[in-house]
Each structure stands twice: as C-alpha cells, then as structure tokens.
Amino acid sequence: MISPVLSWFLLFPSLFLACLFFIPANQTLLIRRMAIVGITLPFLLALWVFSAYDAAIGGYQFVEAHRWADALGISCHLGVDGINSLMLLLLGAVSFVAVFVSADIKDRVKEYYILLLITVVGTYGAFLSLDVFFFYFFHEIAAIPVFLMMAIWGSGNREYAAMKLTLYLIAGAALALVGLIALYLATGIYSFDLVQIQQHLAINPLPVAVQNWIFPLIVFGFGVTLTLWPFHTWAPQGYASAPTAISMLHAGVLKKMGAYAIIRFALQLMPEAAHHWMPLIAALAVVNILFCGLVALTQRDVKYVLGYSSCSHMGYILLGLAAFNIIGINGVVLLMFAHGIMAGLAFALEGYITAQTKTRNLDELGGLVKAMPFIGTCFIMVALASAGVPGFANFVAEILVLLGAWDQYRWHTVLAVLGIVITAIYMLKTIRLAFQGPLNPALAKLSDAATFVSRTPYLILLILLIIVGCFPSFILKHIGTSTQTIAERLR
Figure 1: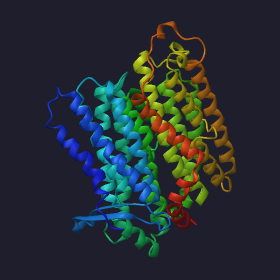
Figure 2: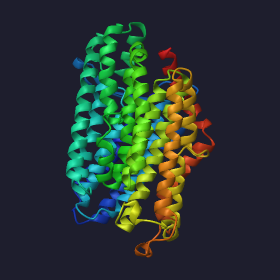
Figure 3: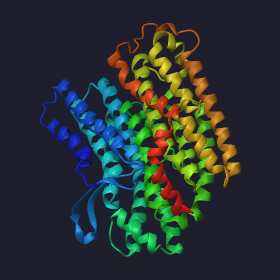
Figure 4: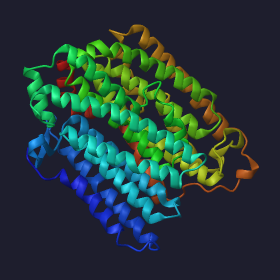
C-alpha cells in the first residue's frame, strides 16, 4: 500500500513547531494552543493508521520512499506494520496528555513547547523509519531536547541528572552506532534500507562469527535507553529531576525505542547471534526486575518509586525477547504499549499531586484520596495496573511474557514472578502512605481535577489500560502477523 499519509506524522508537528518561532514569547496562550493542535493532529492520525492497518495481510503498509543519498544507500523510507503502528498510538496518546499537563510551565514557555515538539517529531520519525540511518537520526533528534528541558525546567539536582542522562545515552548511542555501521558494511549491499537488508540476509545470512560481535553492540547500545542493568542508574534520577511531560515521554515512550531497535536490528537480522547472547540478556533481565524492584521498595520519594519501578518492568520486556517464541514476543509488544500508557499516566498524576502539595516525600503526604478523590483513585488504579492486577493491560502482557519464557528459562520465570510480588508490595506501600490514613492538615485545601476537561487527559490513558486489559485480543490480532514473522525468523 503506497500512501503519503505517514509523512504527515512529521509534517503536522513540524509545521506548528515552525509557527512557534514567529509568535512573540509573551503570547503564551496562543503558544500553548498551537502546541496542543500540533500534537493532537498526529494523535488522531495514529488512531486512523492503527484502525486502517490490515493485520490479515501483514507486512509494511502505507509505505513511502523518498530518495536522499543514493551513493550511500540512504532514503527516507517510511512504513508501518503491526508493531510500530501500535507504537505510534502509544506515542500519540502519551504526548497528547503530556502537552496538557505542561500547563504549569510558566517560564520560557515558547522555548519549552518548541523543544517538546522536537522530541515528538523525532520519536515519530524513529518509529516510522524503515531506513537504519534515519532511524538513528530521529532517535538522536528525540533525545537531544531531553537534556535541555531537564536542565532548564527540571527540579532538584537537575544539572547533575541531565548531565548523567546525557553521558549514558551518548555512550549507548555511540556503541549502537558502531554496531549499525558494522552491519551496513558486513551485509555487502551498502544500503541502510531495512527492507533490503532483511531480504538480503534472509538469503545470505551473515557469518555467525560476524553476528556474534555486532549483535551485542546493538543490544547493549540500545539497552542503555531501555535501562538494561547495570546501565540503568541514569533513569530514576533523570525522571525525578525532569519536568512532568519529559518524565512521561521518556519512561512511557522513548524507552520503548530501545526495545523496538533491538527487535528490528538485532533479533530480526541476526537470529543466530540472538541464540548465543540472549541467555545472558535473560539473566540480566531478572536482575533488572529484582534489583530495581527492591530499590523501589526502599524509596520515600514518589517519583523515585515510579522511576525504579519503570526500570524493573523493562526486565520483563528483555525476558520476553529472550524467549524466542510467539507468546513471549506478543507479550513484549503488548507490554511495551501497556507499560508506556501506565508509566505516562503515573508520572502525569504524580506531577499533578506534586504541583498541589509541593512535596514528593511519602512521609509528608497522607490521606490524599480525601482531598483529591479523582486523582487519588486514578493513581490507585495505576498502582494496581503496575502490580499486575487482572483487568489492566499490564496483567495480560506480563502473563504472556512469563508463559513464553517458561519453556527455556524456568528459574528466571520463577524469579520474575517474585518481582511481581515485590511490585505489589512497594505500590501498596505507596498507596498506604500517600493516599490512605488521616489527611495531613497542611494539605486540607488541595484542589482536585474537578471538571470534565481537566479529567479527560487522565481518563484517556486509564480507559486505554482497562480496554486493552479486558479485550486484549484486538491488539494481539493487530500485531500477530508481525510478531509471527519475527518468531519464525528466530527458530
């Protein structure tokens, strides 16, 4: 299917981004409205592309190819399959809510929304690209504004957190870049086009020895973005110091670019190396789950609890990737979506609570559900989703990951189940300390999200979690052909 529709994912926010440069900085209301429209339009487009994708046919659809540098084999090649069409929906939903919760930004509003739109454009570009060069290009475009937004509009020790995040992500990106260039040279066709590379390697696979040294460069390079242990330490402090919208986008969506890149460039293209390296990744995944979960258990800062929880859940994605079967890979893709929605909503709610209470310390909170029943109820539901309670999308995804991993990694799976128990403990502790018990008298005059308009952004994400949790089959059917192709390649 050839259509120019995918270009509009990049053009819509880019056009409104360009307009912001010509609006006076003191016109903050107009700036906010322009940013909202620039992010809402691709969200609506993502809904249409997701519903219009024909899962029965499978493969890449809505394909566009624009020549760029023929001598190097580079083209702006865009397309979607079941996996990245779901990631577009994830990005659209989380960014839509992120732009609304940014209303509390009062300083340098114009620059803030310019950087936010650049991040969104870069992330859309990365998920849409079927060209390795442009995937990496957009991946970096999405990451660069995060440093500036954290350093300027963040809180706490924001300069240190921003620098640490940047150094880790640069190191990981450099490692991945070496692997991608090595892959480009090793194929011998001198093309960055992912479809051409897939077709070539299906007939002429790389020698196993070559795969075995390129594969870890890509996995560990993008694993830094995914917060693979022990390269995860930048994330909790980064999320704690970042403004709410960036915490939402990074934990909810940008992390998933790391998993997406591992699926596209490592598992699909180098299956023999995957069988060699993924047992190690499975072991590190269990460490991710248990170590980060136990650290979350000790935190007294709500944002650090959410940050370490997010790192812990990435272990389930890594464990599912190591399973090499359709059940595990289905679970991974569904968990990428479910965790992204859940993490985005969790950080949005935390941002609202912190703006009202002026504290993130659990010891200074208490009884919040009495003062803000809507926000408190939503947070409790998100905590239950994180703990894997049935009825939410996370439960279905984690069950699939565990079932997929059981055949090859039984002890890993048992320990991963223990991780779910740990998650339930620290989430229930957070609920008890922040929302239950007597209301702190100093917090008696808090305002809840009382109007339909103020509640709508949170409800969108919460309803998505519940709908997918109760009716996961429509997502699994949507991604089934794409994940089946990957599973067959890994046999």
